[in-house]
Image 1 (cartoon, rainbow, N blue to C red):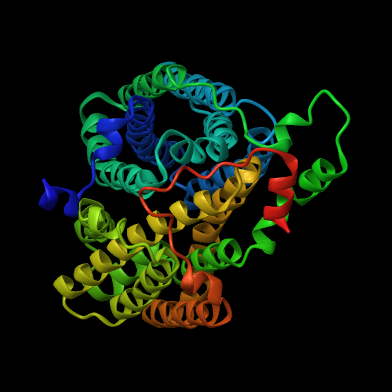
Image 2: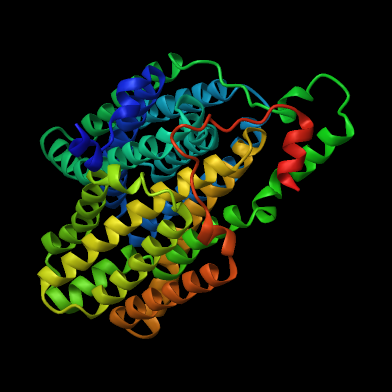
Length: 436
């Protein structure tokens, strides 16, 4: 038993039915989302044959995620978070059904397709901050990191299996079947969310509604968006993630590096993405060890540094096996960094602030990679793909080292021991003190 736990801790799935429901629903929606992403990309290309139009998919996805992610954070700190996630998941279900309907109707309008994509992205972003706060409320503090590791593992598995399934489904049954698969997945996710318990925000942010706010509560409300700047552990963790993705995101460079170094074989291009996912899944399967390292800040800093170094090595790698190995290491490091960051942010944030802080984390997680891909593409166009990868990876490593040097609280941070009670915040005075 002890040996199994050392690799993958499935205790959160065994011990908490609400978390198990959440995990199953999230896994289904992620798999359906990856299938739909491939279908949208293929359908837009089929309709236009224009790379600008396929690039517009990113715009239709990214902008709603940023705007509605921030709105979702405010809502998550003002009302029952389960209700927010229920409404958001229902919106995603309707958007998925709309995609299926337009494919069945033989739609030829790219604009309609992008509007439906934007609607689904907006709905998902609206519920994302509230959804991020669930594990810390559903699990004991000692199992939060393990729960997040399981969630990340399902994401990596969906990223590996989803595109392959999409290719098979589209080739055999066409776009309607791919979108129908996503619709079924979102229906499953909706049913699991309905079963979750009520999760109103703890602390004064929610208690102040319907009556005059006391002085401490007014300070709490004003400080809701500033707590991440006031706590070195929070801003340091987010700055580490932003440094890694903004400066070293490699996805946009995959086609160019494949063309220049490996002959442009599309199968090789697919192997690049698969290698990242395989590394992430491997790290997820070994997460039982990682989540028991209580020095979460140091673990995140180290993993983010390995990510940058591995991508710099990928830029120099000659043989294909070495390039794929570097990407697998990068994928594993990314998983470790994401799991430790997520656990740290949720456990360090008082519950009255978790929605807004989670929305900031969500926006950084969305905008960082997209801007990082854009930066890498510009630099590669001006120089070369290899230079962009090496410079990006080393720049990320230096930026992460700077964050570590300037942020002693993050380096020294330790997660609560397993026997500790779940962190809660009850009352305005406690929450205001935490934000100061």
